[in-house]
Length: 129
Image 1 (cartoon, rainbow, N blue to C red):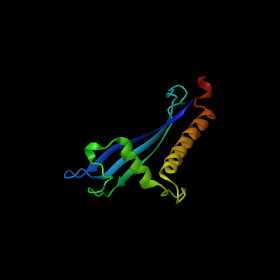
Image 2 (cartoon, rainbow, N blue to C red; image 1 turned 60 degrees about the vertical axis):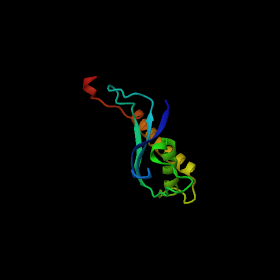
Image 3 (cartoon, rainbow, N blue to C red; image 1 turned 135 degrees about the vertical axis):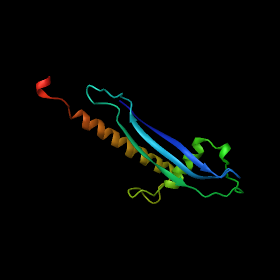
Image 4 (cartoon, helix red, strand yellow; image 1 turned 90 degrees about the vertical axis):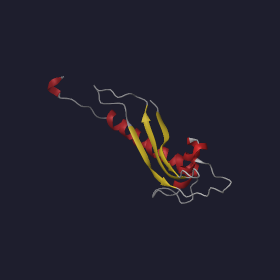
C-alpha cells in the first residue's frame, strides 16, 4: 500500500488591472491508495493541510507573472517559499523544498498512523458473527 501526496491551488484572487495575484487558497492531501472497504472500515485514509496565503507584488518587477500566464507550479512555488520556517516545529532556516518535504512527511505520517490504528482494531458484535 502506498501513500501519495497531492498539492493543489484551489482558488486565487487577482487584481484585474494588472493581473497581480493577492490571495491564494491551497491544499495538500496525503491519501492511502487502498479504497475504503465498507465491510471492514479499512482503507480510504487521508490527511490534509491547507490555507490561504496573501501576497504583495510589484507588477514592474522582472519576476512578475501575470494571472493569465501563471501555472499551478508557479503558485505552489510561492506557497512553499512563503511558508518555509513558519511552523512551530520547523526550523527557521529551512528552504522552500525542505518546507514542502516536511509538510508532506507530516501528512504521510498521519495517514500511516490511521492505517496502523485500523490494522490493530476491528469492528463488530461477537453475537452477530
